[in-house]
Length: 146
Image (cartoon, rainbow, N blue to C red):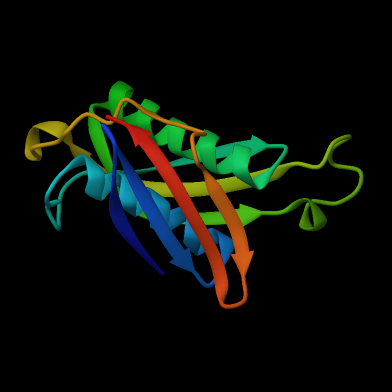
């Protein structure tokens, strides 16, 4: 899995590829961390977990990234070292929900903001968001408002 930061007018974009949807979510989140600061300390910070659900993959990615920004603001930490598990509707079971639901169960290390020189990412946007399966895995392009 990999990501690259891309310049985008007054914003910043993350372009990521990965062999699985779960790894793609983690790669985009790692890109969000990289867009927030030059370097992250290798140690320090407590791990935390979260769970989000949405009706589509794109909405799930948006909600997940939005939640990471929220956690940063509430906990005063920079989420780093992301781990994700995306659960698709096929694996949830027919009686679990009336509508198809995608779920991400994720964890991150919360690096205290006072330990990094972080740039504020204001929000994730749907502007130009791409999330698609490709021959060799998954691809995403996400723009963040700075």
